[in-house]
Each structure stands twice: as structure tokens, then as C-alpha cells.
View (cartoon, rainbow, N blue to C red):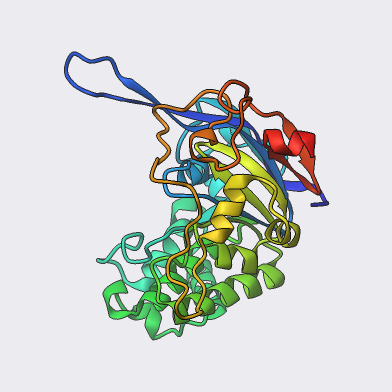
Length: 320
């Protein structure tokens, strides 16, 4: 990727301490471990990985909703930790997974969209009304729909409300955390097309988090693959999908279902051992599930090896 970064993440780490009982010591869970990347203005970074790999924790730290245990997040070159809540909101906004649970069911749509403007505390009523109308129109919702409650809208319309609320402050960056996974397939395409159109029109930068590789391939300019809290491979989207180098990335791509009848569910060769962030294995953390693991993998962590426009963490890549 080229250009000045809109988002820069440096050595980000988040550790949770989970109680196991009255007398047992707390268990340490490493959700995000030494993650670094930069997203240039106007581009889309797709972050993919299985459930529990740390994607949503990463998103919450970038939004300022969760303090990191170590590392820092910079937005437009400014440390997120040094901004107040209102300043952060003007720069970066979220679109969450479930549009029904993220919208207040007791508020009308226009009031929901207006909330970020009201929270700024310095915008007139007339300006708030004008910008709410503008934001609703931009996402394809009418004035009449603005008078309804979320329960009176379809799932796709509710997600449009969530997008309108995210854009009403005119932020530069939008963090999309699984924004289409709760929607029907036909509605997913509409929302993805809307997000792409808004990015071109407004010059937005997206951090797009998803487990759906087909969606990420469609929207992202670069992809980062996460496993057990670490980014194990990054590259430009076209290159990564055409020639993945990490065995985990290959397994994710092999797991995508095809519409061809008779093929059934693909066997990706990962076995039934699920990753446990409270018990991260030594060496390469993917080695217990890797079909290509050899003697170095359990004892030595792989180095970062250049991979086109990105990198890959794998011993096999070091010798390639």
C-alpha cells in the first residue's frame, strides 16, 4: 500500500486476566499479541481469521473502546490515547455486526442517527436536523423512515441506519466489524455495494473485519490474516488470494464452500484441535494444526519474511 497512513498500529497487545475460581489464580488470555500495520488513507484493510483469533478485540482497541496492554494506535499521525472522546468520534466511527442490538429500540431512527452530533455538544439543532437528513439520504433511507423505530425496519435497513449514524460526524475512518454477517445473502451485496460507493464518494478509509473470505476479497485492497492474536500473513488482496504462502491462509481459502453439487464440506486438514488463547503453544503457534509442520516449528518462533507488499510468519517461507 502507498500513501500516508490514516491508521497506524504499533506493537499492539491486549491481555485479559480471567478468574477461574475463588482460590485459583487468574488465567492470562492473550487476545492480541504484538500486532503492527498501517492503512493508507482511502484504502481498505481486511482482517480475517477464525472466531476467537482477536479480530474484534483489535477493532475495539482501534476505536478507543478498550485500552491496549501495550503498544499504541495512531490516527492521522496522532496518538489515540491522547485524544478525548469527542475528538476520537470525529475521526473514527464503528459499524457493528448486528444492526438490531447496536440500535436503541426505544429511539426513532432520526434520533439514533443524531446521537453522535448531540454528544459533541456544540452543534445547533438546525444543523443537526440538516446533517441527519443528509446522512439518511446518503444511505438510501427516506425522511419517513427516519420517523420509525428500528423494529419497524428490515435487517438491511437497520444496517443502513447504523452506517448513517457512523457517517453523520463525517469521520475519515470507519471500522466495520462483521457488518454483513447478520444479514441475508441478497442484502449483504447491497450493503457491500453501499459501503464501496460511500468510500469512493467520501474518501473513507475502512478497517473491514470478517470471517467471510469472499466478502473480504470483494472489498479489501490489502488483507491481514490473524491467528491466535498475531498477524501471520499480509499482502495485497489480489496477490494473497492468488498465492497464499502461510499454511493457515491456505486452509482458510480451502474452507470456502463452492456452489458445485456433490462436493460437500471441504476437508482443510486442520484437524479438531481448536486454538486456545489461554494456552498458546511454543514455537510457531500454528504448528499443532499445521499439516506441513517439521522439527523447527514446535521449538522456534518464525521470523517475519517479506511477502510482496506485506509479510508472512512461517519457517517454510524463510527457506523458499
